[in-house]
Length: 242
Ligand SMILES: [Zn+2]
Ligand SMILES: [Zn+2]
Image (cartoon, rainbow, N blue to C red; front, side):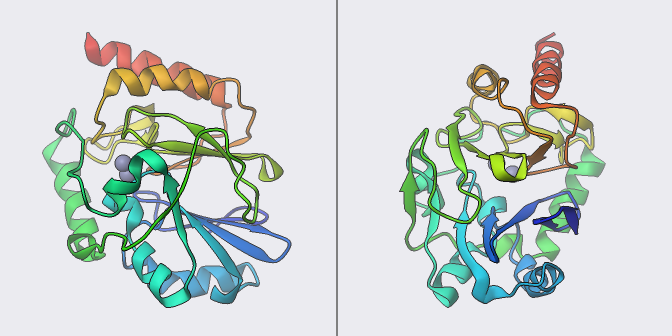
């Protein structure tokens, strides 16, 4: 679906993959679940583009529900997959998921999410044979020229990507607008976070960014401003602590 001109999303908002087009070329941000591979050509066609036009795949972090079709894309298309240097080992499957439990959960939404994911290939996600890495502050030489903002906490190498030309901030799972484990909506710390207090502290690195589109790994786009989203995540984290 189209979010804005030159900005599309794959999937139904439970797990998001984004497509950014600039001058006829495309960057994919996160690779969702394996089944999104089959939806990719149609979404690209809706932008007047094809797989040939995809020049980059950037991962916001190394979790499997963001790796999705990445290895297939890398091997079939010969395009490098990039991730922050501190999540490279996670993306290659060399270290276990650093997540400490689920956080709050409700059985219905959690089972619904697991079933939804399993039906879309989440149980057979291939980790990456090879990744290219980037560091904090880098401006990536790919369509859209995303600027990297390191926001550790959810994982050590979690990164937000600011695409100023599209007025968009891709936050990965630095925070979510839907908690897949509870069904709760609105900006909040994402489930499966390794270090919640570090994740909250990292929000300070985002709050001065101006972006009309705040695009999370899970949930609907947020259009109320980055600072307001950050305020709500902090308030929610505060109430979780009680
Ligand atoms: Zn994650
Ligand atoms: Zn995720």
